[in-house]
Length: 111
Image 1 (cartoon, rainbow, N blue to C red):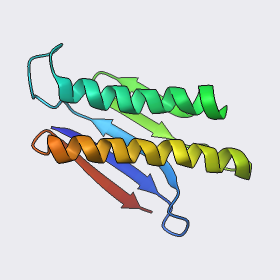
Image 2 (spheres, one colour):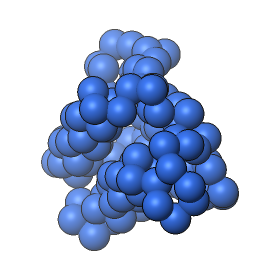
Image 3 (tube, rainbow, N blue to C red):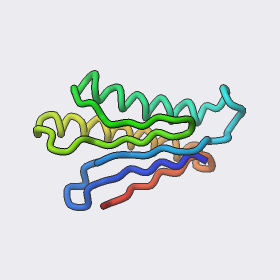
Image 4 (cartoon, rainbow, N blue to C red):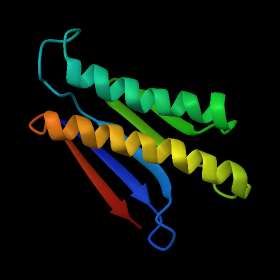
């Protein structure tokens, strides 16, 4: 199962980071559409943060793991744009979870 944890600031509800770990086991490696979808959404979000918003996210990528931290102290226009990109990621992951709930779990963590 893929476990996705989205970390949010308790007061502002802004996303402060996210962690994706595990494998969907929907199909054999290389043919698993759930893993491919989650990877495309999450890695695409990291890439979009830099390419579209101009913010480099701190990301650790290993086999079966993506751990991302949002930098603190961003100026408001960039922070708001980045949050829009991150919230879009959450919606896409929720959509995958609705269709493939046996293979992915999304949890939102308020710190």
